[in-house]
Length: 214
Image 1 (tube, one colour):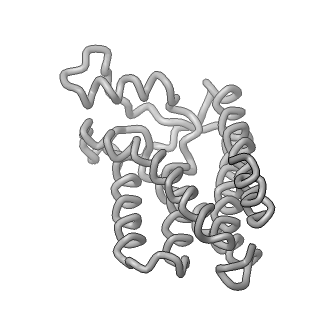
Image 2 (image 1 turned 30 degrees about the horizontal axis):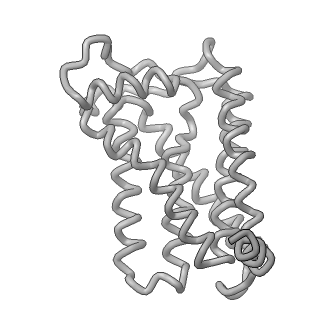
């Protein structure tokens, strides 16, 4: 078993890009610890017109398995796009952290969920306690799904073309959920989309070549 794993790592050097995950976690946690108050609000009057919809929390939390399983598939099946994917995520996280630290921002759109009325509000209340209302522009929920869709769409290993299409639809639902659960304002989403596009363009420009590269 160990020999098999070692042989696979030797034959698939792109797997070392998985170590970028530790960097992503660190660069996410740092602003969360440093930016807790004294932030500029990103909310605009339009955000008041967006209704609070607690069941959208389901799509909000699906962001985590979407990123993980997309990355895992690329790791095992597509070396080139796995490199692109990890690099793009690193760009998203790094540039977002720079914005958070140089321009602390947040929003005060969250409703009071101290007395949840259903399972969705209970889930959302727990999310509020874990994920602060600071460091919201650009939205990483939006920025990071752009590389998911781009890398899956460009992967020749996915023969069922409905898979990247489904990932795209799920990504749109994830993005929409961020404003319906009042975790983000509409400007956060716009900035996140721009950031994700910049990261993808950089990744695809840096990593060129055939999808079977090791």
